[in-house]
Image 1 (cartoon, rainbow, N blue to C red):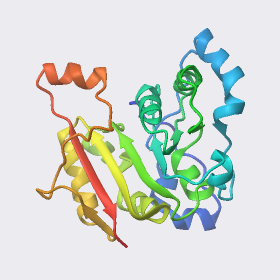
Image 2: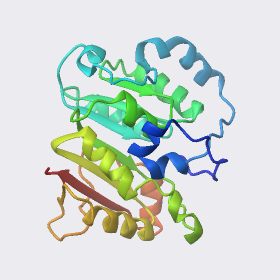
Image 3: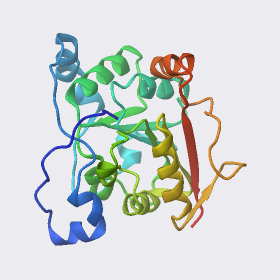
Length: 246
């Protein structure tokens, strides 16, 4: 996810939506900062959005119809520029992937890479992830939800803006299938500890760590250049994987 300062508070949604995820509806975990599109990104948006793009809607999508088949669906929140997401979709053709990102340059970059790779198992939303999950994704439909390197909001007064909170986790629980996995990764130890605390208290989840805390980076999560640089500098990265059990 993009690390960006906070945006103004959004308007309150209708009451029935607000009740379902009250915390995340009040405070967003991102700010919409467009940045400048490169010519390649704009061309990708113009040429490839019809093939890969999904529009937010207030009723659940039929994912079998979207992908033209029945397959496990992996959803990634905040894919950034999309290189890791495209790599994962390329390496797992037996799975279908949905990426959600609010920043247009990242969406454009991901579209270009997805088209170049000839992918048929990847679709993208350019919209708020919580609204997409709440309204456009059916309950019990996802095999995996991925959240890699979200904004850590490292200042204590901003911790309430971290996306991993109890209300958000219960929304994911609704969308995951039984035995579906919520996979998180962060390079901020304090946020890793926060994630662990929230998930350990969350009903309906089981930690997949043999030591009761973190897991080794699984092979299917690509090692990014950012991580490689951090490793050379001695920085840590923490992966957490929790399975829905009820």
